[in-house]
Length: 261
Image (cartoon, rainbow, N blue to C red; front, top):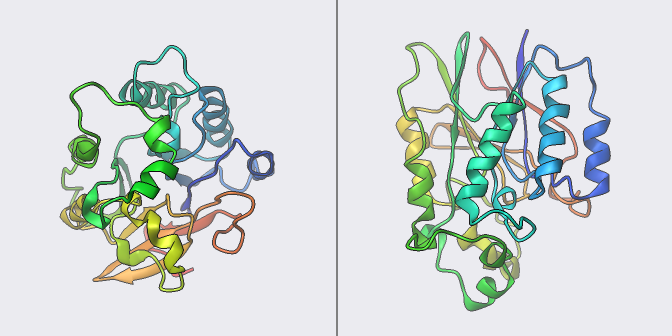
């Protein structure tokens, strides 16, 4: 029976993560779908190789860009991160990777673009100094970075899926801050304002998603909030094995229901 797997934040600029990708089976997932929830690399060559490698292993790969994927500091011939966004989506399509809503028997999968805003808190001066996006991304003149969450959310397809379909949505950014576990030390909560936006949560609810997959935080979670199951299955940095997992996670076996594993 076909399955849906999820991963995010695979950060292929690290050799250990490239080796993880290379060791994925060429035979085990040929009937399956993969949700790739952003943060592959800011390097277009690595992105292209990743898309091609995954497309060989899965029947379908669905993808949303992460913030790292839109960095432009290493691209000399790109004006800003919205141009990079267009390049990344075209590259995905050229490699057979979809950034569009996907329908299969019994299930519809909806990608949700996003960014962060002040809905999880206002960034401190310390965070603005430390957070790489503030230097590695560039935005068109006249576009206030505080409006990026709204800008990207307006790109999302919120068309109601066919009747009787289970609905899975996925995003790179977090839809709600209470998905972060209580054990996060106070000194690390400085990053909460740049983790996501409540706009994504509103769209999750508008779609009627039973399951939402997200990334970005690098903290793996499988929790339920108000009738929706939320899963983060980040590969993350090689040093973060305590809070992440270096394995794909099966999140759905259609035409059944979201996996309890």
